[in-house]
Length: 95
Image (cartoon, one colour):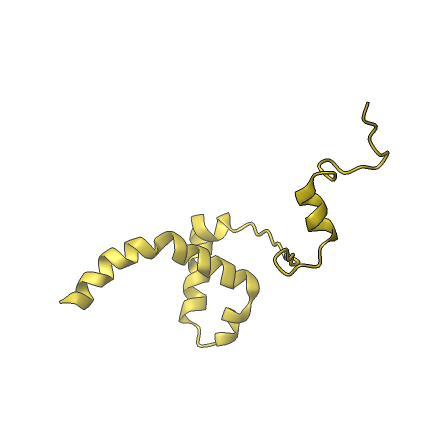
């Protein structure tokens, strides 16, 4: 009968797990992850949020675009609207 170690990690005895945990091989790399959560629904769904984005766009201050939260919002808006922008603007460049 197999007895488990008192503090055994599930799957620890599997060969793949042993090679991953004990290896210094560069093929198994891990990196720290920085996660952020923002509540941006008010920016995307309200008139106040629209006015905020328009004011930032109209401003001549470029340091607004260095704010990490604003970068993430702009990236999200771009990703969700890039197909629409391509359908509208691409034909104008092809003429």
